[in-house]
Image 1 (cartoon, rainbow, N blue to C red):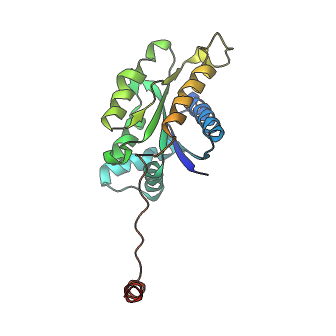
Image 2 (cartoon, rainbow, N blue to C red):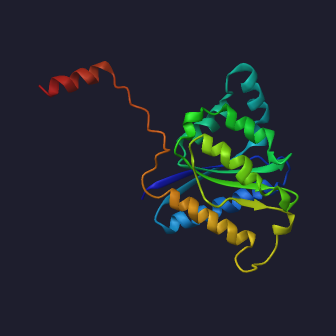
Length: 208
């Protein structure tokens, strides 16, 4: 059974966080749909607020602390990203953008990405298309056609003919799952193994 690794980035600042809640629901739907398609799924959730100090220090020193370096490696090794941010000043949060800025831009090339955002009013929902989508297009990712914005009115509502939050989550997660089937262009290749000189010499001798 093939494995698909998904990294979930949540830039919510509060506890509990609506951004984390949306991220969890997107991840659960994507995992469910990929499992139904016959894939083993590994989901790693990253709370960016826990890395805020390390991210700031990285800008100053040019060095990623061990915890941040581990997260960066996880993003590079993933097949797809679910990225969710709260809206600040009609755009993604500074914390969210700062984390993206510490990544090697080439490391996201070809990765499947599902975008999500939360805000206090529906007027902010265009952040998906006017801020987040251009950012991830610049990074040459493969973005789902559907992004998900959740405002206060979305939580706890019932189905109203397909436009409920749950319906939008399942639709976007289904598109994301579709991007994760087949060969993954965004997967970082496994590092080459270095063999001891004696073992290499023995192999050469054996092929004579």
